[in-house]
Length: 311
Ligand code: UDP
Image 1 (cartoon, rainbow, N blue to C red):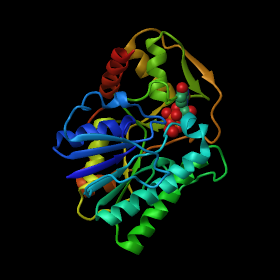
Image 2 (tube, helix red, strand yellow; image 1 turned 135 degrees about the vertical axis):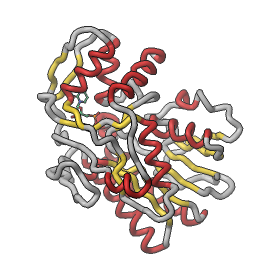
Image 3 (cartoon, rainbow, N blue to C red; image 1 turned 90 degrees about the horizontal axis):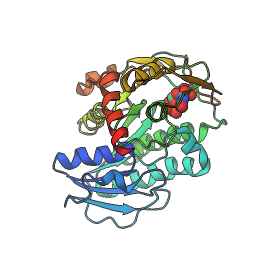
Image 4 (cartoon, rainbow, N blue to C red; image 1 turned 120 degrees about the vertical axis):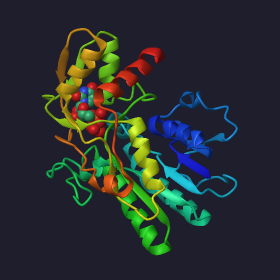
């Protein structure tokens, strides 16, 4: 198949491109390089089935050649410091980017996949979060550009489906980690690993009792492709690993694997930081057998190895 991946130079995008090339597809990678980097393509950049186009999805797409069969829309800064650096652009990326992708999918008769997010649940008061939960999002806080942008994107997607019969797939992604994460993007896993490798104290925000559930990238991609290739399920479908950890437990795991003392320093908790997050993945399991395989310790080992080499 001919596949377009937007946000292709990022952590998830580049891993997705590599997986699709391995499956024998032709991949057109699109990115504005705001948070992604061309170095993420280095393992497959010379593959004849791969090409890259520098473009910002807030602008209408340039001519990208022959028709696509599949469009994966992953374009959007995803770490809180990065998406809050230019919040207006973040909202427009979600809203205009998704609209441009949907219009292209309609014109090409392609299937459209949206990388949505667990952030649509905000600071959830239902735990774990099933897809039916409508969320608890602050619409005017510093996270709103991302959370509400992604919520508006979901609304556009299902309107497009109702109005134009566009074939759509919406995945709600929970915290994911693995090789090709940007060590400087401020995420908790990359921060902790880099700090431990450099012998620094691990920065725990707030008490460290807030929770997240971390999915290794290979497992997440199984979920992406499982949903994209499902004959009928449009979603939204939660994709993530349902094993939950506090940030203090994560700090301990990282320290154990890297060695050294479990040295943590507490810093201020960001505004509207969700207190807990864990996906209910029964829908993905029933629809396409989604079953994440990597326990945190195995995924962390692989990620640490990547950061050691890269450093
Ligand atoms: N966090 C932390 N130390 C860091 C970075 C993040 O304790 O150096 C916390 C953050 O406050 C949040 C959790 O880790 O509770 C996950 O943060 P991240 O930015 O990775 O993603 P989020 O799930 O908030 O989008």
